[in-house]
Amino acid sequence: MNPQEKPLVIPIFIPHSGCPHQCAFCNQSIIAQKDGPLPDHSEIQEIVQHYLKFKGRRKKVEIAFFGGNFLGLDPQIIVTLLEHIGPYIREKKIDGIRFSTRPDTITKERLALIAPYPVSAVEVGVQSMNDAVLSASGRGHESLDTVKAMDLLKQIPVKIGVQVMAGLPADNEISLLESTRKIAGLCPDFARIYPLMVLKGSRMEKWYAEGLYQPLALAEAVRLVKHMYRIFRNAGVEVIRMGLQASEMMEDASMVLAGPWHPAFGHLVFSEMLYDLVCERLDQCPGLLTSEEVGLRVHPRALPRLRGERNNNMKKLNIAYPNHRFRVLTDEGLSMDEIEIF
Image 1 (cartoon, rainbow, N blue to C red):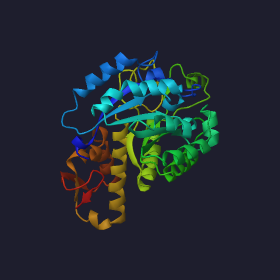
Image 2 (image 1 turned 180 degrees about the horizontal axis):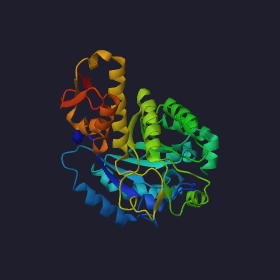
Image 3 (image 1 turned 120 degrees about the horizontal axis):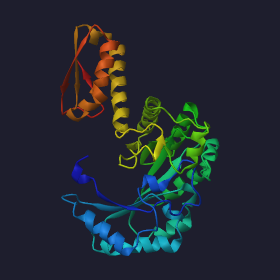
């Protein structure tokens, strides 16, 4: 996508607001790097004015309410927050509104409440479609709530996103991938995949300390998320993020106690998928290995993915195919997930 086609997204954090309880894995103040009351009119104005300076040549601007359970807020608070940005909407400085919310707070009444405003996307915190996993994670809702929420959202003109997690309590590879297939079958427009981290202040901290929960290792998380990504991609669902956003707080070992944290988690997943593709092509077409030198051609921006972190993919290829040398070239005519072997 052309960078100018992507909207400028202005983030407004409402940490842990609107949630009836705290899930076992959650410490929203760490994730959002903020705690305290909801932003007031002057604070929202300050945030919007600051970000509008960076619009550049982009055609659209969207407000994103991140961090809390937006539709779980008191109805008057929902309207107040939306009215805070009303003048920017009327002046056509803001084109759309997006927010995340729990599936069990998506009701006809709540959707009617936001109908007068230009809501462009709703992200549903699905996390899992396995009821035993949801219960063990303290989510407080069932998979049927997600099905009902998706049905309601499809009746209004919004993009639908889903947020899913790998490494939840009581989950395993079979249930995780089955859950992912069910979520993909609900036909959302896009997805975010997050591996679970043990955050200070969460119930998971206690479980981890007592040996009742063991987080995924980084390599295992990458492998599982790779399979999740493929399930979504094959269903036509765009995966817009894998892994939590890098920040000083997320790299603080006193706050993120354990889990498969990596500042470029998505890159690791894409890199492993590209390595798999090379091996698959070479194994299926032995004729590509008739000469000592094997050429690999990728898009220039996919070159880091092909080489892997610290050139790890090339090292693995040299071990897997010891009788061959690999030469890498680039071609802007290829897509980011395409490779040409010659």
